[in-house]
Length: 275
Image (cartoon, rainbow, N blue to C red; front, side, top):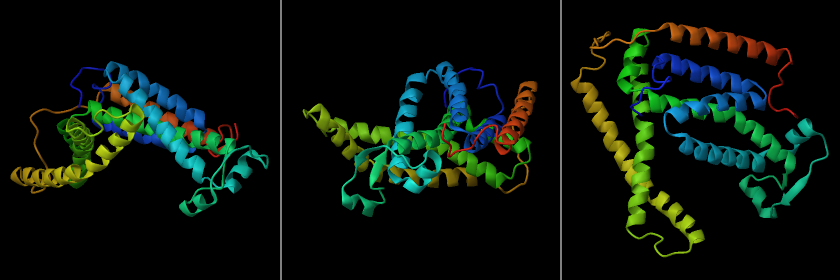
């Protein structure tokens, strides 16, 4: 959580969840450039959060990773349906790679297709990150309770919002501790990458132990506060659904309806698409 006063901080947490749901739905059913536009809309908010450099690096890694994953496993039959029979082969894998699920040839069309698919997921990651950076768990609980959402669901979402950022934080700490102990010290810069990967692998055990301990602490904390004993809970501060939230909600409904109409009427092609 970034304790700042940005425009995105002022939006109701439930509204942020609805934004994420709407963005995911629109990007999933639309052509690739719709997802690209939605992702570009999210980028400026990270500038106000002073996390622009981090999110740009994360976006690059995420797009390359997803694109590579889809490109090496996409069936040539699917590619021929989209691009026709003239596929441009740029690399041939060794024959034993097929046992790992790889297609025999890596084609230019497979890379184009995989980048299109990654654009469906990229905006979802960006708007999910905005929730983690701008939503205090206590505010999320209060706002969801106001909309009569079941306490069990509220608790599950709150635990996710609390735990996911700490997983990365603990993993980063564990990796840095491994490097401080001398892993990869005085090694070639190229080899240092492999030592960092080794440190990441060795961080799995302390990370798992931390998560088990944290789960126990969360359980004890909920029990001491009589969580789920009563149907209603009282809060010292209330969170209201402002005019801005209502305006955003109206825009989201219109955007989803218009996008769905354009997709199913053929004006905006869905993925897979050639173009």
